[in-house]
Picture 1 (spheres, one colour):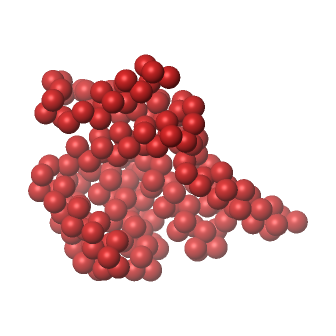
Picture 2: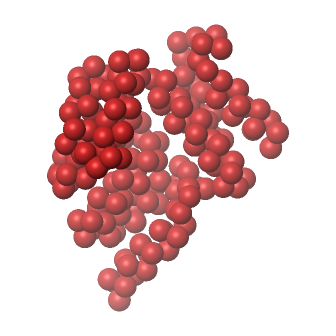
Length: 184
Protein backbone atom coordinates (compact mmCIF):
# COMPACT_ATOMS: atom_id res chain seq x y z
CA UNK A 1 0.00 0.00 0.00
CA UNK A 2 2.81 2.42 0.85
CA UNK A 3 4.49 1.72 -2.49
CA UNK A 4 1.23 2.49 -4.31
CA UNK A 5 0.80 5.73 -2.36
CA UNK A 6 4.40 6.72 -3.09
CA UNK A 7 3.82 6.08 -6.80
CA UNK A 8 0.65 8.15 -6.77
CA UNK A 9 2.38 11.01 -4.98
CA UNK A 10 5.26 10.89 -7.47
CA UNK A 11 2.81 10.99 -10.37
CA UNK A 12 1.03 13.94 -8.78
CA UNK A 13 4.14 16.14 -8.70
CA UNK A 14 4.04 19.07 -11.09
CA UNK A 15 5.38 18.23 -14.54
CA UNK A 16 8.17 20.80 -14.24
CA UNK A 17 9.52 19.08 -11.13
CA UNK A 18 10.18 15.80 -12.97
CA UNK A 19 12.33 15.01 -15.97
CA UNK A 20 9.84 13.77 -18.59
CA UNK A 21 10.97 11.68 -21.56
CA UNK A 22 8.52 11.71 -24.47
CA UNK A 23 6.98 8.35 -23.59
CA UNK A 24 6.62 9.12 -19.85
CA UNK A 25 3.04 10.47 -19.95
CA UNK A 26 1.77 7.20 -21.43
CA UNK A 27 3.67 5.15 -18.87
CA UNK A 28 2.43 7.39 -16.06
CA UNK A 29 -1.15 6.91 -17.23
CA UNK A 30 -0.66 3.15 -17.46
CA UNK A 31 0.67 3.06 -13.90
CA UNK A 32 -2.11 5.31 -12.63
CA UNK A 33 -4.77 3.14 -14.30
CA UNK A 34 -3.18 0.05 -12.74
CA UNK A 35 -3.30 1.78 -9.34
CA UNK A 36 -6.94 2.71 -9.99
CA UNK A 37 -7.87 -0.86 -10.87
CA UNK A 38 -6.01 -2.26 -7.84
CA UNK A 39 -7.05 0.39 -5.30
CA UNK A 40 -7.85 -1.35 -2.02
CA UNK A 41 -10.59 1.09 -1.00
CA UNK A 42 -12.51 4.20 -2.08
CA UNK A 43 -9.82 6.56 -0.76
CA UNK A 44 -7.18 4.82 -2.86
CA UNK A 45 -9.52 4.92 -5.83
CA UNK A 46 -10.12 8.65 -5.39
CA UNK A 47 -6.37 9.26 -5.16
CA UNK A 48 -5.63 7.28 -8.33
CA UNK A 49 -8.55 8.98 -10.09
CA UNK A 50 -7.15 12.38 -9.12
CA UNK A 51 -3.75 11.48 -10.57
CA UNK A 52 -5.36 10.36 -13.83
CA UNK A 53 -7.37 13.58 -14.09
CA UNK A 54 -4.18 15.57 -13.50
CA UNK A 55 -2.32 13.61 -16.17
CA UNK A 56 -5.15 14.20 -18.63
CA UNK A 57 -5.06 17.92 -17.80
CA UNK A 58 -1.31 18.04 -18.46
CA UNK A 59 -1.92 16.89 -22.02
CA UNK A 60 -3.46 20.29 -22.81
CA UNK A 61 -1.41 23.30 -23.83
CA UNK A 62 -1.89 26.42 -21.69
CA UNK A 63 -4.26 27.92 -24.28
CA UNK A 64 -6.34 24.75 -24.48
CA UNK A 65 -6.37 24.43 -20.69
CA UNK A 66 -7.68 28.00 -20.44
CA UNK A 67 -10.49 27.23 -22.90
CA UNK A 68 -11.37 23.98 -21.13
CA UNK A 69 -11.41 25.63 -17.71
CA UNK A 70 -13.64 28.43 -18.98
CA UNK A 71 -15.92 25.90 -20.66
CA UNK A 72 -16.15 23.81 -17.48
CA UNK A 73 -16.96 26.93 -15.47
CA UNK A 74 -19.68 27.84 -17.98
CA UNK A 75 -21.07 24.31 -18.00
CA UNK A 76 -21.21 24.17 -14.20
CA UNK A 77 -22.80 27.62 -14.22
CA UNK A 78 -25.65 26.41 -16.40
CA UNK A 79 -24.41 28.06 -19.59
CA UNK A 80 -24.03 25.02 -21.84
CA UNK A 81 -24.17 27.07 -25.04
CA UNK A 82 -21.21 29.20 -24.00
CA UNK A 83 -19.40 26.09 -22.81
CA UNK A 84 -19.85 24.52 -26.25
CA UNK A 85 -18.09 27.51 -27.84
CA UNK A 86 -15.13 27.08 -25.50
CA UNK A 87 -14.93 23.32 -26.07
CA UNK A 88 -15.24 23.79 -29.84
CA UNK A 89 -12.30 26.20 -29.75
CA UNK A 90 -10.28 23.81 -27.58
CA UNK A 91 -10.90 20.98 -30.04
CA UNK A 92 -9.78 23.12 -32.97
CA UNK A 93 -6.45 23.55 -31.18
CA UNK A 94 -6.21 20.01 -29.78
CA UNK A 95 -8.34 17.54 -31.76
CA UNK A 96 -6.56 14.53 -30.18
CA UNK A 97 -7.32 15.55 -26.59
CA UNK A 98 -9.80 12.94 -25.36
CA UNK A 99 -10.86 14.94 -22.31
CA UNK A 100 -11.92 17.88 -24.49
CA UNK A 101 -14.22 15.56 -26.44
CA UNK A 102 -15.70 14.34 -23.16
CA UNK A 103 -16.37 17.85 -21.88
CA UNK A 104 -18.00 18.86 -25.15
CA UNK A 105 -20.15 15.70 -25.01
CA UNK A 106 -21.38 16.77 -21.58
CA UNK A 107 -22.26 20.21 -22.93
CA UNK A 108 -24.15 18.65 -25.86
CA UNK A 109 -26.01 16.39 -23.42
CA UNK A 110 -27.00 19.42 -21.32
CA UNK A 111 -28.40 21.16 -24.39
CA UNK A 112 -30.42 18.05 -25.21
CA UNK A 113 -28.39 17.09 -28.30
CA UNK A 114 -27.93 13.39 -27.56
CA UNK A 115 -26.67 12.47 -31.08
CA UNK A 116 -23.88 15.07 -30.84
CA UNK A 117 -23.05 13.93 -27.30
CA UNK A 118 -22.83 10.32 -28.46
CA UNK A 119 -20.58 11.25 -31.39
CA UNK A 120 -18.23 13.14 -29.07
CA UNK A 121 -18.19 10.27 -26.57
CA UNK A 122 -17.31 7.85 -29.37
CA UNK A 123 -14.36 10.04 -30.34
CA UNK A 124 -13.25 10.42 -26.73
CA UNK A 125 -13.31 6.65 -26.22
CA UNK A 126 -11.53 6.07 -29.52
CA UNK A 127 -8.70 8.30 -28.31
CA UNK A 128 -8.70 6.98 -24.71
CA UNK A 129 -10.64 3.72 -24.28
CA UNK A 130 -10.02 3.84 -20.51
CA UNK A 131 -11.84 7.17 -20.09
CA UNK A 132 -14.14 6.00 -17.28
CA UNK A 133 -15.79 9.42 -16.99
CA UNK A 134 -16.82 9.26 -20.66
CA UNK A 135 -18.27 5.80 -20.05
CA UNK A 136 -20.28 7.20 -17.15
CA UNK A 137 -21.56 10.05 -19.31
CA UNK A 138 -22.40 7.53 -22.04
CA UNK A 139 -24.32 5.47 -19.49
CA UNK A 140 -26.35 8.52 -18.42
CA UNK A 141 -27.11 9.55 -22.01
CA UNK A 142 -28.19 6.00 -22.85
CA UNK A 143 -30.40 5.79 -19.79
CA UNK A 144 -32.04 9.15 -20.59
CA UNK A 145 -32.73 7.83 -24.10
CA UNK A 146 -34.43 4.76 -22.61
CA UNK A 147 -31.60 2.33 -23.41
CA UNK A 148 -31.16 0.80 -19.96
CA UNK A 149 -29.30 -2.23 -21.33
CA UNK A 150 -26.78 0.01 -23.08
CA UNK A 151 -26.51 2.15 -19.96
CA UNK A 152 -25.79 -0.95 -17.90
CA UNK A 153 -23.08 -2.14 -20.34
CA UNK A 154 -21.42 1.28 -20.31
CA UNK A 155 -21.51 1.46 -16.51
CA UNK A 156 -20.06 -2.05 -16.22
CA UNK A 157 -17.25 -1.01 -18.57
CA UNK A 158 -16.56 2.07 -16.41
CA UNK A 159 -16.49 -0.06 -13.26
CA UNK A 160 -14.11 -2.54 -14.88
CA UNK A 161 -11.67 0.37 -15.24
CA UNK A 162 -12.52 2.12 -11.97
CA UNK A 163 -13.92 -0.48 -9.53
CA UNK A 164 -14.00 1.99 -6.60
CA UNK A 165 -16.01 4.62 -8.46
CA UNK A 166 -18.01 6.70 -5.99
CA UNK A 167 -21.66 5.70 -6.21
CA UNK A 168 -20.90 3.16 -8.91
CA UNK A 169 -22.16 0.07 -7.11
CA UNK A 170 -25.46 1.71 -6.16
CA UNK A 171 -26.04 2.90 -9.73
CA UNK A 172 -25.13 -0.58 -10.98
CA UNK A 173 -27.76 -2.15 -8.69
CA UNK A 174 -30.40 0.34 -9.88
CA UNK A 175 -29.66 -0.26 -13.55
CA UNK A 176 -29.63 -4.02 -13.07
CA UNK A 177 -33.05 -3.79 -11.40
CA UNK A 178 -34.39 -1.75 -14.31
CA UNK A 179 -32.99 -4.16 -16.90
CA UNK A 180 -34.10 -7.28 -15.03
CA UNK A 181 -37.54 -5.70 -14.53
CA UNK A 182 -37.80 -5.27 -18.31
CA UNK A 183 -36.81 -8.90 -18.91
CA UNK A 184 -39.55 -10.18 -16.55
